[in-house]
Image (cartoon, rainbow, N blue to C red):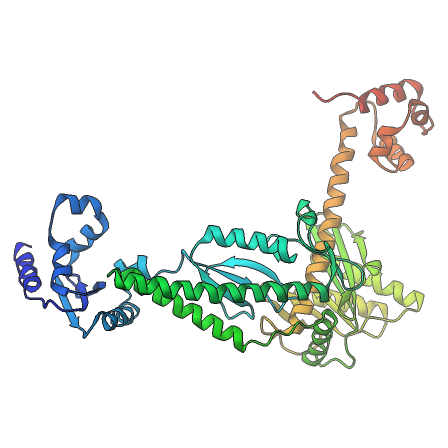
Length: 492
């Protein structure tokens, strides 16, 4: 160990007093740190001064120095060359002790998902090839969050936590809480008006980005002049990334597709990939929901021209007591839905979508066979890998994640899932409320059912007067009085 230290001391003493880049390596020859210096000898010597003050002040660097077994240098003609070479070598070797200066995790980007009908402004740390547009990086996270909050007030845009609601036509309600009253413009707006707001907000961010680039370059020059080369190199990399962002922005032609354009694109793409005889203007989608085989329900949602037709939604209580047999449940509800359409002489949809794989599709197909009707195009969407399953002999189909046909199917499936789960939750909540009657002695199943049937709900039962309770068959004066006291008792 001492011999190794002596060798390092000799190397340090022999270093030139010129600008350049130095590489520190461990005993395996791995580069663990890359630095640059105006004076190589003076800069590298500072690491090996060994004072207790240095170790206390720079514990991380002191730990790194303990690992150094070899030092190599690259001389440069000037500091600018050293700065450029350092950045290149850091990217090449990715030294572990340069992490603080190369990791961009402390810098944030603003992501705008322009491919969606209602683009939102989000903070993120990594740029992805997902069709979104990115602004930044921005160094001060707190200030950036404040800027976004101010932009929401100023431009009336959606941030990441917003849950907008689509109203009739192309109108949307952006916020439901108090924030609805504290930003410019109306909370209820149209898709076209909202896109104009997003356009103005993006222009603001582009201008802020250009201003930031100028500030970064000025600070980089100052750091280089003050010989803080590590900070200067970091600012250089940051400004280069920002410059690339601005160049992409200038090349970007902002096109805001109308809501009906997006929907028609999905319908046309779906018709093509499924080889349908007609465009799927009317699509119906089914989902089954239960809790460990109890409260088994199903939903059917209907989309017309790519938009939800909520008045046509249907929900089903599965009658067969199927437990957790999703196949049998799907067979029942599909049979009930299209048996009714057949009996009423109404047309079948252009496409039927089943939430599930081959088993659920097979169950739906069997239901159609039992009805003796012309079977409409029928597919399933399996959740695990978003795979399309056909009812005929075609193999499974996986579409690209951003394919408009897949996005339309996902919207259908998610809406059916939401509607089924809501019905399931409503039933469970009703059952829990009604179970309070189980704690009242002297009320059997028949009388309990008679009360609930007479009043319609537990809430209506609680509002009933004693005389109204006595009007129910089997409920005498004493029982009615006792039940009234029970329903109006104060909780402990």
